[in-house]
Image (cartoon, rainbow, N blue to C red; front, top):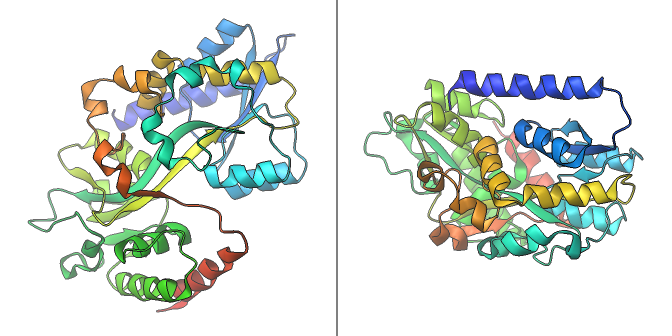
Length: 350
């Protein structure tokens, strides 16, 4: 899709949300709390029409900010979209309710079990998988010459000095180093983490910056030749310049995550929440949403309905033969401090 199309669709989505916010009436209202631009607005309209309701959407930019709001007592949401590692914490603190699978027949019928290894809770006790995301390397095809971009080793290639960006995210970047070294992205072995620290510091000598937002446009515009980043972000810029931009999943392995749909214990419209989750798992709806969010929903029949260019895009749908190389980042509880200390050293080293 072109940049203008993305801008237009986002503007329409925001306009729709604004209109809904000012709309009166006695229709039941479904309140969603999700990530920005993470739901096809046409599907929102279709759900409203099918269920004679209104949908109100609030957005967050991180799991931490979302959870802080929930912890502070903010209620009224009927469906929230946290990442997997946050679900366990929300369940432990009684912020979300166990799901009744009898009310989610589409989920039971259409969930693609291929993706079960990437779920922290494949039983879906509290959660229904919404989207599978993974992290790799975006690169400029026209600027890498004959350099292979199939390994994390490219991050220390002298040919790209000052033209590389790394994610400004301790778990993602330290996790990449751990995978390169043959360790788990969730390692709490201090000797392994020290080796990962040394490797990231070596990478740091070659990069331009740590960045979570501008890397995709940086690669698209040629500022960066290689950008460590998320598949959904990269897919958006690849759509504008497929001949110039590529996406690689390093052979040593990479991180993966799943954003989920959960129902808070404080939900006011529980039946409508179930209806919405079930609606999103209709294959036609899942396919439409995948094309909008540029990352895969684990809906087997929905994936089959996608155009060939989408099904064949490794930046949108993880190739089946690479599932074994993906590892999900998990919450490490009190061991998170190990990563915080290493990250402080990385950021503080010139």
